[in-house]
Length: 152
Ligand code: IDP
Ligand code: MG
Image (cartoon, rainbow, N blue to C red; front, top):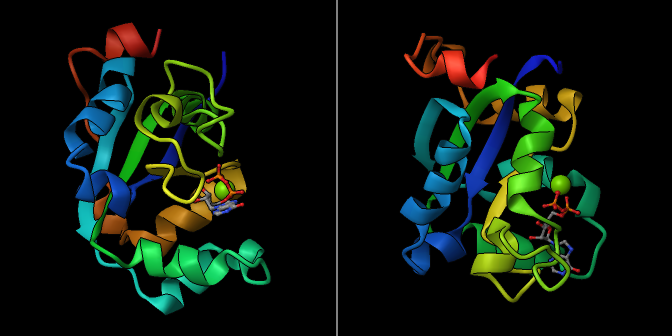
């Protein structure tokens, strides 16, 4: 069985604008991922330059940064068995037009620029991204009655 992991999700401004925050959050919750941290974050250019450092030279970078600052985003840390890959499975491919039906991106979006949700893509990046957006004391550790179903 895979390890219990933590991963970072950002519900992006298009989901906030389009009033889909609750529906998107519920996709992860119903899967069995445990919310261990959650807050609104209004991103700025400095944090986005860190977060999207792998895209700074891309032609879409400026638009991506402006988009990500449109509204606060919902930052969430999820915990679960193999959470990093499981969350990306729930999200689907980066381009919603290529994502499988049933995934968040396929079901809620038609545009790669407005693809609803961000999630960490590796253990190293998850640890770095959680630290980027959350203080240690904002990430909780607690038992839930349903752990027996999700951690077995
Ligand atoms: P990911 O979000 O699936 O991990 P990345 O390649 O890390 O995909 O890209 C980060 C974000 O940059 C994407 O989620 C998307 O919002 C944006 N992005 C990626 N490629 C494009 C593009 O070709 N045009 C516009 N935005 C893009
Ligand atoms: Mg990525």
